[in-house]
Length: 92
Image (cartoon, rainbow, N blue to C red):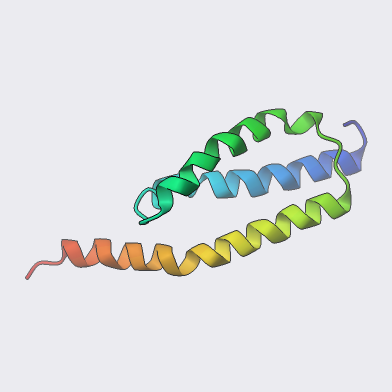
């Protein structure tokens, strides 16, 4: 990828993947988080090879949309996990 659109696509895709990968420590606390963590190896591998992928605006928009949906779906479970964690730390 050499033109400015390709570089922009690469940056946008990389941002999505890194955002998801940053959730790894939080996902470890979820009941079914381990099954999601198994997929992180695939994401990490893809991230290492992303500069070899020919991307279009439509591809990037789909990935951005999927990332936003994934993050939205995780809001409630992560909030519950955080709530449970903070309840365990309260002095009684």
